[in-house]
Image (cartoon, rainbow, N blue to C red):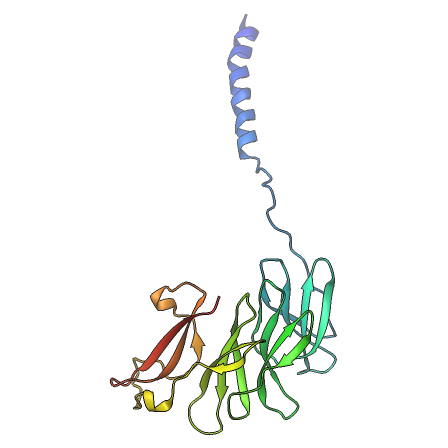
Length: 223
């Protein structure tokens, strides 16, 4: 009788312990992603800069000599492709697999470039002066950036294959000039206006100084 009573009390206790163990044992969650290590183009590092919705990765890699950067594109179907010399700046890729960025031209000047799978790499030139810089790329293949003049202020531009490079900066006679104070942005770079929570396809261009000494802005749609 005593043995039966003990079993009656022990059985529920053992069941509770087993339930507790099942609860405490960590469950394996379904893995929602896969990590892929990109191969190197040379003996130095590979640096991804951008990825599109198709899983294509664009970036730069050091090759045999330090400071010699090559542009690359990678996807799971074709693997790593060396696209030739590039600068060490930011790289942008859209969903068409087109790439934009900035590199050093044969004359030693920084210049924006555009690469697409059909035609390869194209230097975008400048509006004036000797340098240009790419700052964004949309899915229509339009590049926005700025062109640095030899003298004077940089000019914002938009480029596409059909129309080439066009200025986004109004005539200087239409822009108020003055000295910018600490509370205003002090350059002419294109940037996404996150302070105003604009959609990502809108890019704000700093055009010039207004009466209060702050840079005027022109927001354009580029997507």
